[in-house]
Figure 1 (cartoon, rainbow, N blue to C red):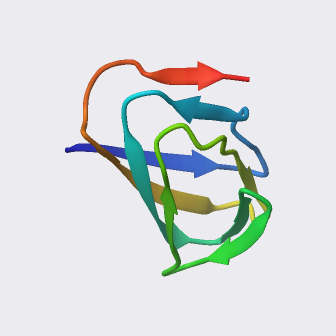
Figure 2 (figure 1 turned 120 degrees about the horizontal axis):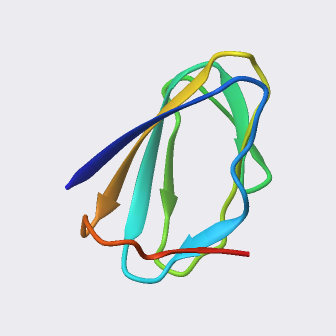
Figure 3 (figure 1 turned 180 degrees about the vertical axis):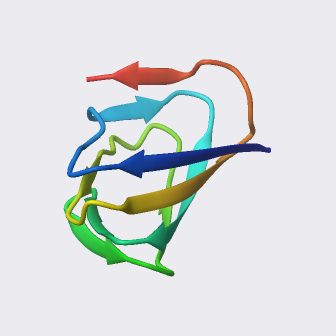
Length: 79
């Protein structure tokens, strides 16, 4: 498994998808928008392999933990 912690300060990620993995995201602080859905602390979001996704912070301290399954490699394709 691969663990990634992202901290966004009123920021965003570029829209992208993964060619080899799914991603499970847990919001651990703040509020944001993932795939046009408002999310907040303790929400869990599942992003399937090949699904286009993006992340936008609403609050200054928006923190998520993402687990990619299977882990490893550079399979991110930016749109």
